[in-house]
Image 1 (cartoon, chains in turn purple, orange):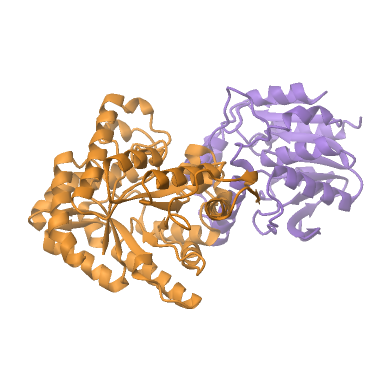
Image 2 (cartoon, chains in turn cyan, yellow; image 1 turned 90 degrees about the vertical axis):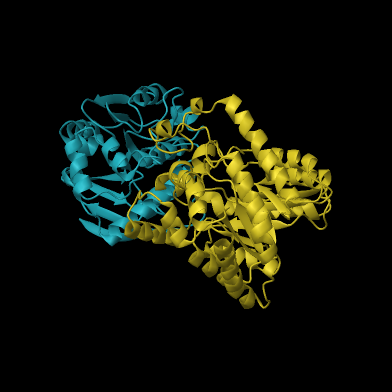
Length: 257
Length: 379
C-alpha cells in the first residue's frame, strides 16, 4: 500500500492506494481514515483501491470553502474528473452520504455505488444515535455489536499523533454532521437520480443509524439491493467481513447497467 | 469599585438523587423534575433578591441566559430584565449575556435590547456571549461555526443600533434585506456591551481592540486565572497603543460573608458544593462540543483535564483554595477581593451571593453583610 499526497484544486489530501484492476474509491466515515486492514487488503487483490482522507480530516488540507457535505461531494466530483474513467464508489457512514450526494449530481465516472450504513437521510420517528453526547467509551461500544471489537479498540492507548488526529476528525464530524444531525433535508428527494447499480449494506444492530434506515434507502434508490447483516453494528465491512465481503465482491463483479 | 449583583436563578427544589441518575443537570435532565408551583416561587424569590440589591446600594443587577437546565431558569433573560425595570429606579440592569450564535435572527436580540433600553431610560448593560457548550446540544446550532456566527451577529447588532436604517446586511450566516430598528436604543451610540468569558486569548484580543474596548469579565475562574486574563487584556490594550481603563476590567465570583470564617464556611458549604457538583458539572462532551473552541485550545483543555483527573468532587475548601469562590468573615473577603483588585486594577466586581441551594434567608443575610461590611471598604 502506498501513501500519496493527492491534490485537487487548492486542496491536498492524504491518499492510500493499492492493488490492480477496476478502480474502487472508498470514502471513509466520520471517524477518519481507517487502518489498512483485511477489508482493504481483500479488495485490493482484484481492484485498484483508492482511499483518500477527506479534506479537513487528519493530515489533509482543510480549505475554508468546504463547509458542508454537498461541498465535499463537489470536491470528489472534481477528484473523479481528475482520475478519468469509472470507479466503483464505496462509502461508509459520512462517506456514504458524500457518495450519495455525488451520485445524485453526476454518475458519469461512477460504475456502481455501495453504501455501508450511510448517513444523509432522516427517517422521522427513528432518530439517529447522539454520538456527540456519547462519552468516548460509549462511542466505541455503541459502534460495535460484538463487544470484543470494542474491548480491543478501548485497550489501545492512542499515541499523541493519533489523539490529535482523532480530535481533528471530531471537529470535522461536527462541521459536517451536527446540524441538521447527519442528514441533508434535500438529499432524499433527489435519490431517484442515482442511475447506477446500488448496494446498501446495514448492520442489524447499528446504534448510530438504525437499520430501519436501510428500507428508506431501498425505496428511494431505484433498483437498489438492500442487505441487512445480523449480529452487526455500524461498521458491517469491518465487523462482519465474512458476510459483507462476498456481498460486495459479487456485486462489484456483477456488471453494468 | 462598581458592584454587580448577579443571579443564575437555579432550581433549588431539584431532587439531587434523581439528578445524578442522568448524564447532566442540563439538556437531558427530564423536565418532569421541574415542579411549576415550586418554580414560580423561585422566580418570585429571585426577583425580590435582585430588587433588594438596588436597595442595598449595588450599582448593577444582573441576569443571564441558559437553556434546558436546572442550573439557571432564564432561557429568556430579557423577560426578567423587563420585570426588574418595573421593580427598580436607578440600578443598571445587566444581561450577562445573550448567547448570540444560538439565534437565527440576531436582529431580535438588537430589538429586545433596544426596547429594554427605552423602557429603562438607558439603564441597560448588555452582554454578548457564545453560550456554554451545553447550549449547542440544547439548540442544535453547530458549534463548529460558533465563532463565525458570534462575530457576524455582533457586527449585525451593533450596526442595527448605530447605522441609519434601513440598510441591508450581507453575511455568511445572516442575511437581511432590511435592517431598520424601531425603536433605536435610548443610550447613544448604543448600550454598553460587556464580554463575560472564561478567558480565551482570541476573545481577549477581540474585546480589547480599540474600536471596541469592551469591558471584559472573567467568570468562574480561580484567582490566578482571573489575574492572568485581566493582565493579558491590559497587555493586549498596550499592544493596541492604549492603557485599559479599570472600567474595562472585572471578574465574577460566588461570595459568601458571615461574622466569622467558620460560620461562613458552614453556611455556604451546601450551596457552593451543590452549585459545582450538582448544577454546573457536565461531561466534557457536552461542555466542549467539537469546534466550540479552537483546536489548540481544545488540546490544552484535554491536557489539563488529564492532569487533574476527571470527575473529582469539588469541596468548598478546594474551591476556596483556588480562589474560585470567596467565603469568610468580612475581613477575609475584603482582603481576598482587595488583593485581586490591586493586582489587576479591575473596577468591576460581579458577585453571586445566591448559589446552588442557598436559602432565601441566608442569601439575604449574605447580601446585607456584603453590602455593609465589604462594599464600602472596596469602593
